[in-house]
Image (cartoon, rainbow, N blue to C red; front, side):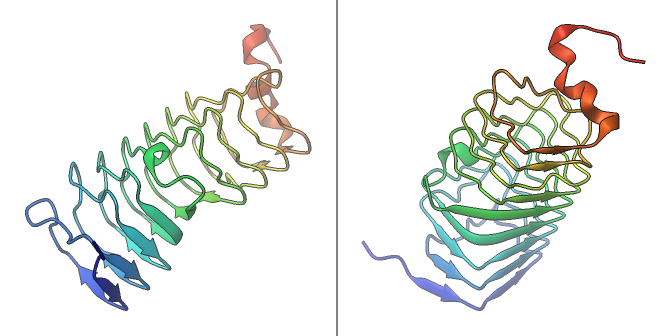
Length: 190
């Protein structure tokens, strides 16, 4: 069954929790101030779209394609990006709340997480090569078998990354936050 094609539409202040967004292929669309929380965006395709000031918390996004999609000042609590279409996830986050988001197993090379809250986010088995975490809160974020090679964490804070359980070759850290690489050793640094 072919889905409808929707291009260059601007959706503003729509409440998709009451009337779900129709299943379609969305290209170059803008979603501004829209409500999707606890709803369904599964099996959709979003290409070159922007979501601004939207709430997608706990939204079902299974098998959804996110190709060159920007999220700006969005609430994405508990979003399971690990269920999105594998290999078809190219996103950018700016000033978003991604608390409890799950990125497990996805390839997110060169992804920008700028000024975002990633508290308790799960990055297990995620490829974050050359990603940027400028001004990100990584409190209790889970990094296990995560590829952080060449990632920029120089302005990230509250992280706890085990260098023995992750790949961190040429990753960038600031001196003041290096304690985040040593927490497992339970040592005191003054």
